[in-house]
Image (cartoon, rainbow, N blue to C red; front, side, top):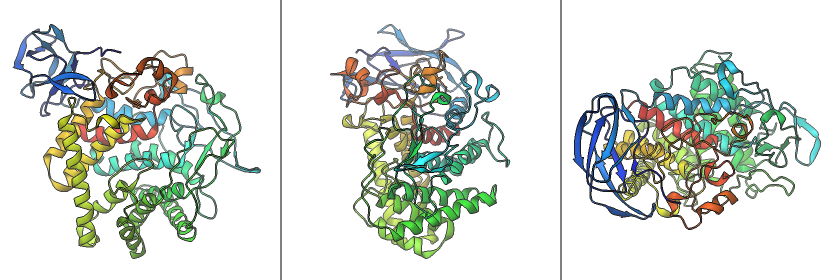
Length: 540
């Protein structure tokens, strides 16, 4: 499948002070033209063409950072006779997409009506209001209402939710001025910024996933996925709490301790509840060391989110509990786990969570950590950021992915690495890290092999047909806005992808088709790191 865009750039534009670089499959002279007046405001030459292994095509780069005046522009390759989409240079070009990325969580709300006053044409009735039963114990039923649907399906998964709420809380903690404006959600019972009100909606649901003994159910779903065009209120099959797991319990402990710290000045009574829940989960973990990784029961066909290593989740939990309480028992546990070679100290995934523990500890004052531990963690974080910079510089489109890293949810990897680079820049003062982070943002918004803006509702070439049940079933031509598509996946893991993508280079293994769940689904934990990066970009 040939690419369809020959000039690849951030379709949302640039702020005046940002570096501005496009990628093209043609080299030569180019000009930047004001799209309103027709005036050529800048002329230059691209780099020579060089091979790009991930995209399978030769590429050149053009730099027009010298263009700083606000306005609407296009780029023309004068020798090739092609031009870019229209794009702006503006003081805050990312404000709207930042707010939409955040509001996408509202559209994933479960158990409440999405009113047209807030949801517009994507409104729908309340869904999934019945109690769920514990797997294997149909007589044991509990409330499960609330929270966010995980993805294009209607399941709710603890480990996935933990990453999502952690990313958004971190975004608020690191960039509060970018996340204080309203995004158009119902007012909570307690006045607080919309970003924290939306996360609170998920936290209140997560509390329902904890048993009385402190352990946490891995997920609540129906036994099988509903049809793709099934609206949430029409999904009326029995809901089931799948068994507890160590990973869900540890991830729960981590985000509840984090929430206890972040919400204590705005929602003190709930912050106390979060803290009690975190300590209860930790107590269960310390008393229950054995147990295999989670596996779906034989009669449950929904997403598994299996993970055989729980040490990284426990490290994260210990770090968050220490930062919240300053109790030495948690520091001792975090320090011991940081010495493990069983997991990475720098990953920010739903399964590989060691990076959250490291970032938590590095965010504390230097005197709150033993000097050798802080040095170990900071060196690891900076080394991983250096690696990301190297990958980004070697790639024709500036993305920090190797050819074999175009996997299911590759856009999550891109945004996770941008998060790591942003935080590394803050922690070390090294500006190349911040520049490389913005390269990942530009990739997501159009400077990529296929020329897509991978966020619904934005850009000259947005994703229009995501694997997302409400968008497929609501009869509205446009999908729910603000959702990040999974991105290229060279493993070709669904029939729609297999029918069109076999033999394509890794970075081109994406199809904008509602049936392509392995390339074109959305999830809350692909959106969440994008919120963090968008908040940073909005202030850049």
